[in-house]
Amino acid sequence: MLADSVRLALPAEAAQLAAIQRRGWVQQLPAELADSVLAEVDLEAMTASWHAAIVRPPLAQFRVLAAIADERVVGFAALGPSADADAEPGTDGLVAEFTIDPQAQRSGHGSRLLNACVDTLRADGFERATWWVRSTDDVLRGFLVDAGWAPDGSHQEVGTDDDRVRLKLIRLHTDIKARSSV
Image (tube, rainbow, N blue to C red; front, side, top):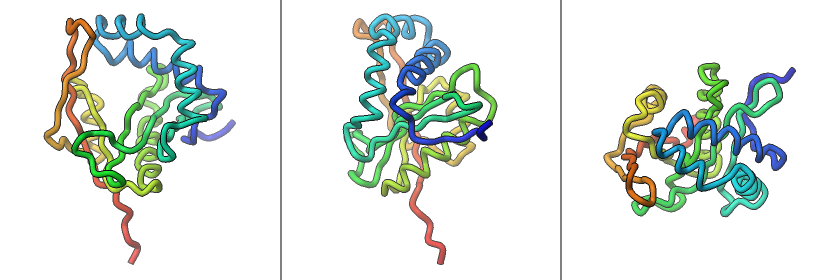
């Protein structure tokens, strides 16, 4: 049996990532929004999208990481350069997606995956990491704050096309500059 770990996702794992993402949406989003999002995109289309992100990333610095336990995927993260209007190109990286399978939470996978995200962004030359978090997600925000992240004052709203459901997001950030050993 392999030790719990994080590594780059493999193309053959795209279906597992899509299934975990769908379960994560059900757990994390308000029911009406989760139902709307799940109705808009099927598992097959999501699998194809994750497969493409793994084998043909839109940018060289775009990465999909997989958290592994008992030789199966239990979570994932998607990282890359921040596309925010105020982002500093080459300096600001983004954790765009981060989901631990609800069945595997509270087992250390989130901490391992978060550390791998920061290490990967730093290795790709980024000096700051950002992450958009639902303003009502106290658990995730607390997890990140405990790990050294903080709100930077930016916020935005997203929602359904008909505006029936809106979510407020706040942006957290952390300094990930490589430290000199001198």
